[in-house]
Length: 66
Image 1 (cartoon, rainbow, N blue to C red):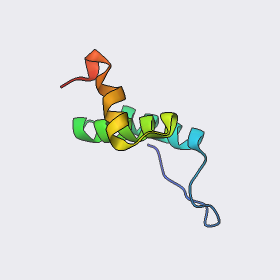
Image 2: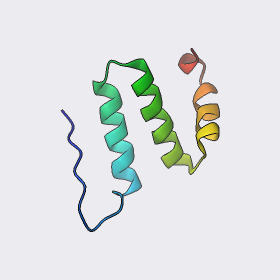
Image 3: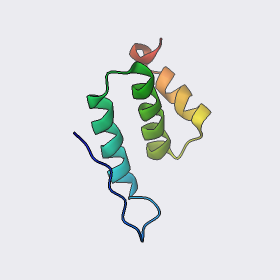
């Protein structure tokens, strides 16, 4: 199980760590909506994109379309 740890002096963990955490959480969860939200969060970090841009990137991949 993945645990989330925040260091008090840091606002957010580095992007690479956030991406790795989102991927690990996506692998563990069974809820498709939660997996989708984690994917959008991951794409936003990778591409410095807005929510709508991240959804467009995700839906450009045909196997992710619902």
